[in-house]
Image (tube, rainbow, N blue to C red):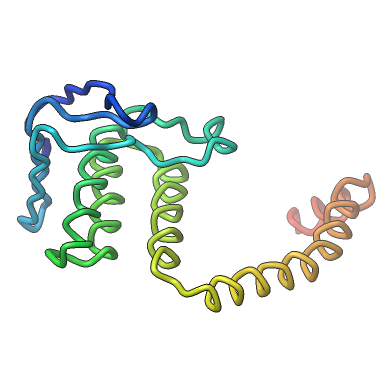
Length: 165
């Protein structure tokens, strides 16, 4: 296992959703990349919006990867590595821990999304929101038509006949 150390945490006294590590944790990647999380580091485990915790809980088999990723992000802000590399390590750690493909890539996409926009200007965020709105408006009617077509017996029949040959 590329992780050494055990996950020992205590609730942070000033931040109700944060924890402090009580022991060092080290991760060494297959290419020799190493991240050492010193005791006393602060983590919020998996940074999941409250509305999505039903899909990806804040803690799980991936908690140790989330702790190492939080520290790798601190190292990235200090210039020791890039945020893209920190996020890539996170996905590799999730894979090594056996996190299922869909969940692993969903979690990685979430941290990449935040990474790409965390240093964005208000103009860039505005452009993202505008294009997201355009995509939603354009996709909404198409998705409704496709969903309705698939939900009807005729649509399902056509689809299955097409698949069978």
